[in-house]
Image 1 (cartoon, rainbow, N blue to C red):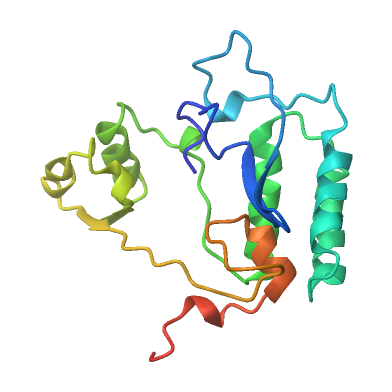
Image 2: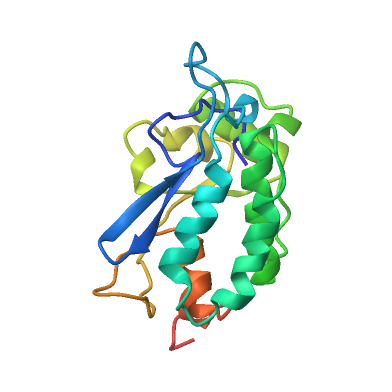
Length: 201
């Protein structure tokens, strides 16, 4: 978990998309940003000057109360929202652990801040994979502009480029919208995970 990299103000670290009758809508966790432009993800503090937790829950209720698995999933999300996490990373990790538990994902999570990995950009990634004893690095298409593949391969680490194809599943309202929060999938499909596997396997 790359908690040591820079927090992106217009990124996905503190917001995500849900589905409404009008289409996709952002839900955003307000954070303290003034004078903290270069802060790392692990240092981002949540701003509680507004009652955003109650607003998020009301928004989820209004848009997903008719979803098939709402009655099971909503209380689990509500439990997380009842807690007042000082840091954004703590809130995000609680949500990630909830999702992992629901899908029985047992992959070990390691924070970058717990690794003794020096350098920046590609050098940091190479050192992080090495520190974990990794022999491969899975990356997305968005990193092609800066990732130096030969730096990995020179020490025997294979770079694998992800070819992501978004699965389709039953949603509320009109036509399917991709790349929404995992909340959308959970409300609509529960913990059914066979959609993520090739039907021919």
